[in-house]
Length: 281
Length: 240
Ligand SMILES: Nc1ncnc2c1ncn2[C@@H]1O[C@H](COP(=O)(O)OP(=O)(O)OP(=O)(O)O)[C@@H](O)[C@H]1O
Ligand SMILES: [Mg+2]
Image (tube, rainbow over all chains, first blue to last red; front, side):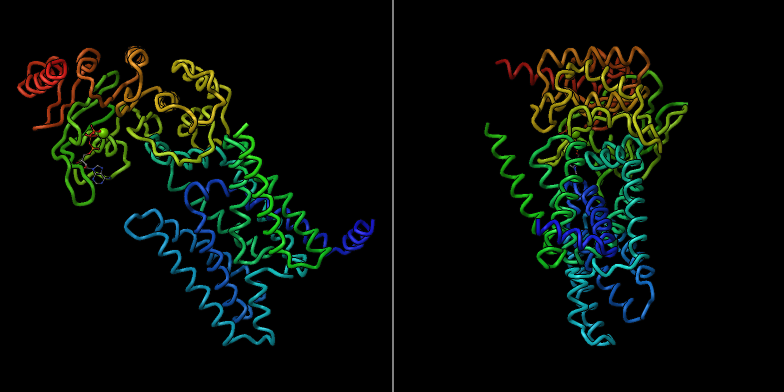
């Protein structure tokens, strides 16, 4: 009972409600493309991009941009396109290139913040950009709207292009031979990833984003065998885990991002166990 | 105007030339078999024609109203991720995808086509099965059903019978012949000489030099006689 009272008290604050709404939307969006990213071996791109976004944020904060998104969004989208192109080109070692870009962005971002930042608490700023600690509770109304709009865009695009995304993910060569504009859809996928990363940085910070993308997909793949059921289950899984994580974090006062990812990990372990038992029987 | 015209095509990978000066024409209604030994460059040629790899030089032209999204393709090998979650139904239906352009969803007609083609390949009962849990031959049939969904005009098949049992092989040749009779143009790579000579209207032979012509011309030609002779010898040797 005490818990329910606590919760209703917290939910009487608008910023808590905002945080939960945004959290659910982010969890939903990031899980959708997870299957594609895991299967195309793109999951590391998500990781690289989030570091690039971190670098962009630090530059934006040095420049004292009122709205950091103006810089972060385009930089991340462009990096996504570049990384995707280099990943396709077998001659450039795609994963090495990405690792290089991502650590460089991380190092540069941290250095710039240290050297130029006017804030008294640099390590606190850095920590919350990396791990998303409390930022979800300090969202402004504009940020909530931006998140909501971007999430809806991602959702609509995903639903409209679901069949094409499947075709391109399952067998790119066949799709290409039959005249599908494979490059266009790969580009679309890259742009959506970038959008998701920028949105999700608010919730879990840049280091933990990959978890939001990968865990739901991997968990669903343990249990289901068709693309559609895997996609639907990962969306449900992601939303449930994000909700549970946020509630726990509000009640227990733990950092939001880390709590959500921990719940995801627990959910994955559960799915793996159920999958194994189901296969044996 | 022909469906497909290739002139003085030179193909290969990066700076390694596999074949040069390949010219052939595929007209609507043709049944072209591509013959040649392992490593001759048949699959490479096919991939070039389908624009999966770039030709080193030369021209590939589509004509007679054939659009790139009206071609069905069965690759020699389809590399599918080990743990890819996909049902047979989803895969076959994805064959209809290319010619839909930007239209987002499958229509009742698409689903009907997918069902019909699954039935043709005797795979209807596996509709909801997971693709990666099927046997190799069953997977081949699913991919064939997908290729059939992709086209009513030009079907490009790279060794479609590999991995199929004799009965299914026979049924498949019959099916392809029926499709051809109903107006679908066929380009097929095959190691099955007897079936190729029996069914196809044209032969593209790749080996010691390149030959392109009708099946009768091939059987009468020097290259054809030598190739058929070699294959025959091999068979005799196997029997002994
Ligand atoms: N991805 C590749 N990169 C470089 N060379 C390749 C590649 N694929 C094939 N080759 C080479 O090109 C040549 C032709 O190969 P191809 O696959 O076209 O033969 P094929 O006629 O289809 O043979 P098979 O009957 O065994 O299918 C071979 O010598 C092969 O080594
Ligand atoms: Mg081949």
